[in-house]
Image (cartoon, rainbow, N blue to C red; front, side, top):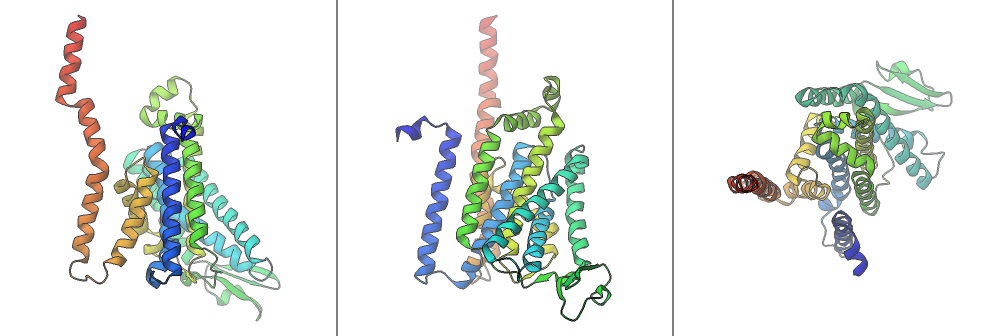
Amino acid sequence: MNAYKKLNKSTQKLLINIVVIFAVYIVVTIMDASGNLSSLMRGLLVPVCAYSLVAVGLNLCVGYLGELSLGHAGFMCIGAFTSAFFSKAFQDTIPDVPRFILALIIGTAMAAIFGFLIAIPVLRLKGDYLAIVTLAFGEIIKNVITVMYVGKDSNGFHFSLKDQMSLGMELDGKMIINGAQGISGTPRQSTFGLAVLLLIVALIITHNFVNSRTGRAVKAIRDNQIAAETVGLPITKYKLTAFTLSAAIAGVGGVLYAHNINSLTATTNNFGYNMSIMILVYVVLGGIGSFSGSIIAAVVLTLLPEMLRGLSNYRMLIYSIVLIGLMLFNWAPSILKWRQQHGLKAILSKFNKNKEVQ
């Protein structure tokens, strides 16, 4: 207990979050083992963790870097398809556990690489322009994947942008990416326990990053970029680092998502505009700068529509009320703090102090 009290507040909050996540995992596991968890809710456990990971990554970009990105569904798409491609291509040659570990590394690395490459030109923009460009990136990635045809036979890989017949594969060849139909038959290796573990690891990494020297520099750039440049901070370096880490975490969410379904397709609902907006809603309603809030919002807004499916007439009404309640609950402390710092009483007290000094 004494050791806990010696920790700073952010570390204490991280430990509390980890304990709560672990407790929820135990409760859900017990409910599943006893048969009290429906098949529908069981199927949503891994996607909830995947969406939470992407929301944590986006919150790092929006809340700490201060840049509005609408392209994290694209990074999730890259992580999902590159990892699923690897798992499907080497399904018969590499054992399950090493193959999934390699797929996780490849999906995360590819998302980070694309995040780094996109960040070089994109982070020169500001505000709405940055959001539009990142949104366009996500749409481009989705549309490129839908026209790709990749197969594998004894001669190696075959690639085409026309159709399946133009690949010229042998009879024993198998399709890996089949255009708009995506990738089917990916090994379902994502489990709820693994998803929870990766979510905890992501929270630890983001906590250490935010409280490190690089993280403090990123927050200084967010608050006042001109002042940060004046004191000699390498603006481009720190921005690239934060954005790349944010994209990599989104890629991890994509890997989990891809290995939880039998058929992976690049549709608007999965990786397009709708998903980008939904992830941004998780971040905003959960509280910008609050990783735990992003996770709570992702869990509530993903599970609630399915829990209310029986209330067909009042489902969207209750959902809207919960959205408003989340917004008021998360933003009320921030508004109160702002009023305390910038309200009329604060201004008058500062004025009186200055007058007494004179």
